[in-house]
Image 1 (cartoon, rainbow, N blue to C red):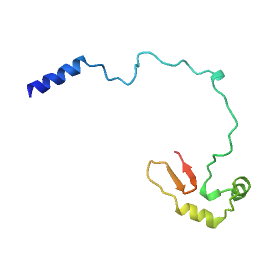
Image 2 (image 1 turned 60 degrees about the horizontal axis):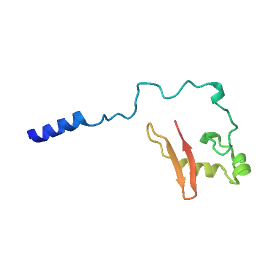
Image 3 (image 1 turned 90 degrees about the horizontal axis):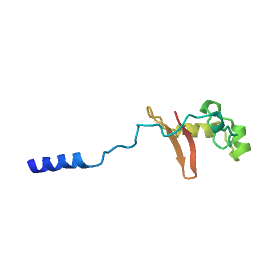
Image 4 (image 1 turned 135 degrees about the vertical axis):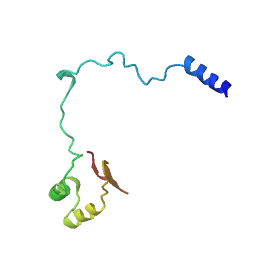
Length: 100
């Protein structure tokens, strides 16, 4: 047992330090207003409350004929877990996501 403990001690003392990064000096400078740019939203990603879904926008923008029955079907497919973000994924792709 002493041989194994001695070997582990030698490896621990002579190995390279297991540090993820050097925190001695900052890697980046301060952010200035010239570094940031505000752009126009793409319009693809939107988040709506299930109580106030814009059915007319769905039809106009995405070609989906949605109504209250569709919203009920969507609502029943949601999963709520404490302290989690959830998404409803169908065979056609991502349908709904919420990040908190």
